[in-house]
Image (cartoon, rainbow, N blue to C red; front, side, top):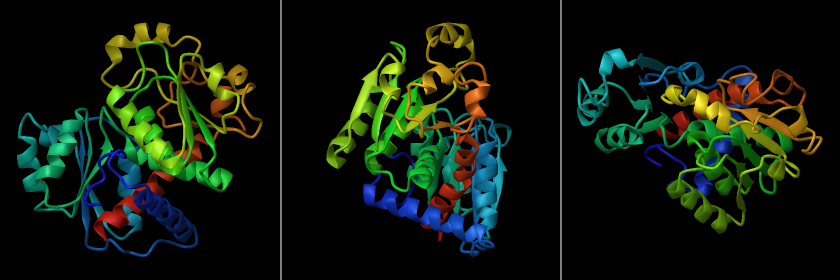
Length: 305
């Protein structure tokens, strides 16, 4: 693995190794601190979109592993506008030992990887959010002890998060189902990628339009905001279309008593999820947020060390 751009082109065994490494690095950190395996190395972090978890989790992951990180916002670079993406990749990769990019257009991540001399990590694009999905699998494995045979129900928009969660489930032996309003289904190309991996690993994928139809036997109920960054002009339309897709006590009562609730954050409380569920006993949302840092330590360690 030279880069970490999406989960569609990853090997299942390699992802299993990353998850094992994340668990080990998390335990090591809690036992007193990580070994400085990235001492003398710096991660250049490109941001087109604002961030809380992505920026802080990557920066702290580098610090915990003995390295450093530089944050580059849109005003510094103007990716693809002030400078071409290939030029940014060539210059930045001559200064740093790794690049993380949080962008709109997934093609920008691909161009960075093509022209960079150092590893490139997709911190989020409009197509994929692989770092989030790896942290999600870490959270589920910690909760249930293993991943194969567990069932995840995604309620809401078939967006980049749903796409990467579907791919992660396919790799790790988790049965995946998703309920979306008509017109908000997952990207067909990515759905095909996930289905191919799921078939290879003996897991199932189910698409539905009714949340209550998929949560009954789910171990994990997952949701995300209905209006992502860049979709603000669709807010009122989306709020109307997603009526009935809220993760609330009524929906949760249809699930297994020991099921858990995940949300990649930021949450629009009162829209896709209620306060009662978000702050309730079945929520693992904030453990999931912490696990971004530990999953990314594994990615960074694997690629840079």
